[in-house]
Image 1 (cartoon, rainbow, N blue to C red):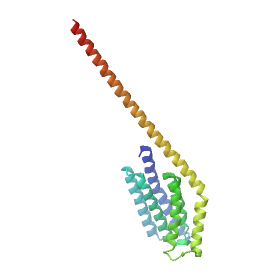
Image 2: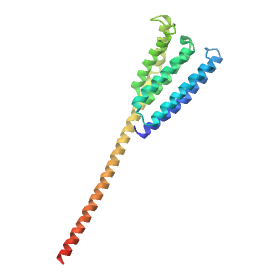
Image 3: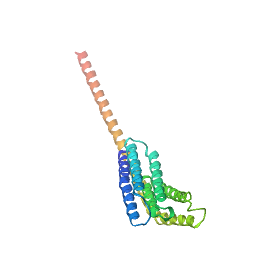
Image 4: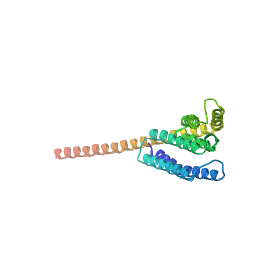
Length: 219
């Protein structure tokens, strides 16, 4: 993993702290306005768990753990945290599902277009997966259809936005990879040049010693 990509991953995990805080504050304000019920203790506990997960992933990235391993893990954690928020704020009656969109955007930004599409699908499945155990959704009932429609509107409306982010990120990663390859080629060329210079100097020194030896023999 190149240094620039590692710095990007670290910055993304630090930004999670702000997003989690914003989500918690927004939830408390909505509860205060009676949009849904949310106890402060539950909100505070969720905030602590979320921020702790971001700090853990930040440390793992800092230690050089592969982003191919960590990226899917923190995306799963993010989806699970949104699911917990939906469950805590009333299920189908909660607007908390909107937080699935920032996760898909983060996936596009961190891993590209394909990751964003996978996260979008996983978010939709997990949303229905939360509503069913709550006893609100059954297969093809009104709540089920409403949940599906919400996901279609949410990710359908943002499809080109997410695809654009993903395309830009894939190009950025490609540029970083090309830059890293060029840097390695320059380093290798520099090493070979230095080695050639050293060998040339050794040959020149050997020639001088041979010429000096011949001169002494001829005397």
